[in-house]
Image (cartoon, rainbow, N blue to C red):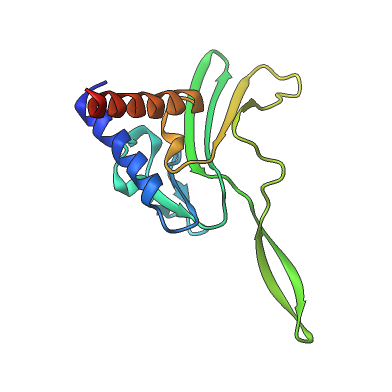
Length: 166
């Protein structure tokens, strides 16, 4: 592990320990640029340019998890791979009756999602594979997979303990 990775991981640990806001922070990037109804490109950070910088960090007020989606599509021998990082989509809206009138309310649905990775069911088609990984700590959707993120964090803790003991 080089000094840059060690400092980044130590900073993440300190951020987690000193955080006072309740929402999670995740990396956000898309595999391709988005377009709006007027066929104009919307500026998004592409995962092909992902570099762990501040411009990829977003606050997720309606999510308790970060998400990383990795997919591969193979059509006629040509393979296309992609990555998508974001807040897990857990926001739901509903109507609530308050003081004699209906109001729009927003909630977070965390029932169906758990930490870890799962493969999407291809319904018998073998042209694509998609994995979804979910994790519950700030900026945890940066690693190749969630287990790598946990191992990286543990190695920083062990390194810091070693530094302070010896």
